[in-house]
Amino acid sequence: MTQKSDLMQKIVSLCKRRGFVYPSSEIYGGFSAVYDLGPYGVEVANSIKNIWWKEMVQWRDDIVGIDAAIFMHPKVWEASGHVSGFSDPLAECKECHTRWRVDHLLEEIGVSADEKMSEQEINKIFSKNKQKIKCPNCGKRNFTSAKKFNLLVKANLGNFTEDFLKNPVYLRGETCQGIYVNYKNILDTTRVQVPFGIAQIGKAFRNEITARQFIFRTREFEQMEMQYFVHPKQEMKEYEKLRKQRLQFYLNLGIKKKNLKWHKHENLVFYAKEAYDIEYDFPFGFSELEGVHARGNYDLSQHTKFSGKELSYTDPRTGEKYIPHIVESSSGVGRILFALLCEAYNEEKVKGETRVVLKLSSQVSPVKIAVFPLLTNKPSLVREAKKIFDFLKNDYMCEYDHSGNIGKRYRRQDEIGTPYCVTVDFDSLKDKAVTVRDRDTMKQDRIKIEKLKEYFGKIL
Ligand code: GAP
Image (cartoon, rainbow, N blue to C red; front, side, top):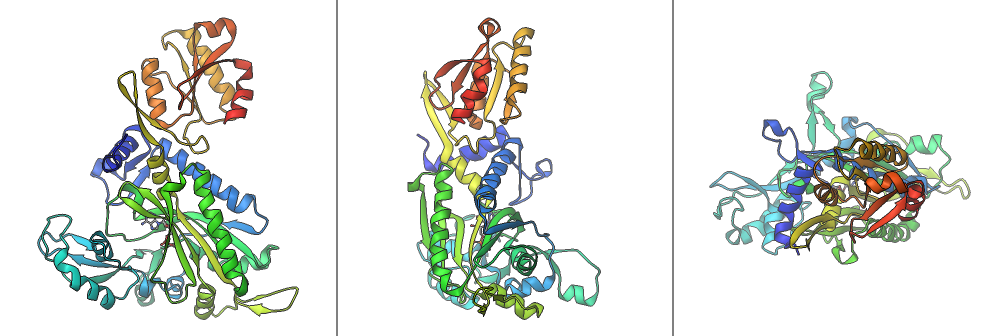
């Protein structure tokens, strides 16, 4: 059994060792809170996105997908409230000069605060508790007061006119703004009618100060967001439906129910009707995986006000005109990848040795089938194994592996979560059958080569 306290270190090490996640620009010493996905990380992330897109768009006749640009008109971020209000409360340790999020420092001593509180509100709580809080870096208790720090990342785009400097272009802080500004295009060019949804997967950028917790909180990350436009009277009914669907999504990915929980927002922003997070039990405790929010008509009203464009909806059956309310699902690909790795990590004792195995669901495992020759220096076995790899690769993500002895190859595939390994041995050349090893049970089956597709078709 892996202790929770060790799990973080083990996952970070496995991600680097096996090619799931690398620190960004590592040859230059890395770049704080930015990570690259390696060959296996990108496969898991693509599977997460494909499953999400299938559920959100392909299987629905009321939701369409878009891919909006990362650069948006500067007014978007004024309308959304990000320019004035999208900030974290930070305090500096006067001894070692590191900066910390005050809501997180308070959380660690069991005092609840919200990053959305005003500077004055959070400072009131902070000064009451300051003497109880140690700097996580140097252990001293000597902080400045909290100051709000805007999270939007400015971009150096456009010409440097007076106007540009006053209204800088930002890298988008959330993908959903690209959805709101396309609401009218979708209504005008597709056949959707309220209730309908718009889904998008794409990068978002935030100037996060707390660079901890591996890929949990990064400065560049990928969001999967779906905004569902509804009649005001239907908002809470649709919201409850969405909450159920979103929890089920994580159960379907293989996350255990006991490791997921709902967290209700106590300090709601003024326009929100209700907001819940789905939290996962990460190595550092339950933390947000996804937000499911009932946002009222705030977003479309704000964009109407700032753009001067009419964003109301007229019901074609009743003629009723109104600004649709929005219920949203907003999740992060990196956080889901991290949660899946935590969930899947297992250590087992096998014949006195420790076997590390990622028990990922085959829907998200980076490789579905690994194919090996038993001995790598026997051309007849290598030829047959490559033929089997070619035979299966069109239907499944396969890997041909011919490095090291067979034990090492099994261990490597266990560590990256490959559910099945196919081994070609000398008997295969005569009986046209191969050994198929199951990752979880380590049981081996002898299967005719011509029946392999049928066999995997049933179990994968
Ligand atoms: N449109 C609503 C919105 O963006 P959010 O709670 O700020 O809401 C939604 O973010 C999700 O995006 C989070 O639940 C998380 O999965 C992901 N996310 C947010 N900030 C992140 C960061 N700095 N690093 C990685 N993922 C992040």
